[in-house]
Length: 178
Image (cartoon, rainbow, N blue to C red; front, side, top):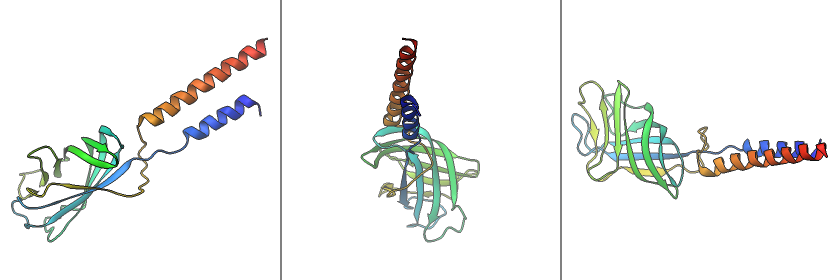
């Protein structure tokens, strides 16, 4: 194999290294719901976020469980929709996610006056909603998601590798013509 082929192979192997998105658990206590059991804890996951950035992208949000009584059968449920999440140092510092798939709706919002809310699409009642305390977000340790990391490091690696291959290829053509 020539030197250029070795470099191309090394660059392709670097690009094949997977990048992984972050996953978080969320929870809130049903303090202001209607037609539901007060004190129930609503829990779920958020998957597909990148660290140290404002994420505006499609993510998967799941409703995993409702403690106490989930007589309405809301859990489990999942949504794949756009939301805005600020992740800094591995923690969600701000969230604005709302989705309604025609069966069940969810609203996870940390802005002042924000809320956690789970409701049926038809009629809005009965629903689970927090007052105080707020929504809690907890990172899931060492999760390996199949969602690619869209960070600038991955982009820089791609651009740098491609530019390096282009320069080496041009250099190889120049040497063979001499």
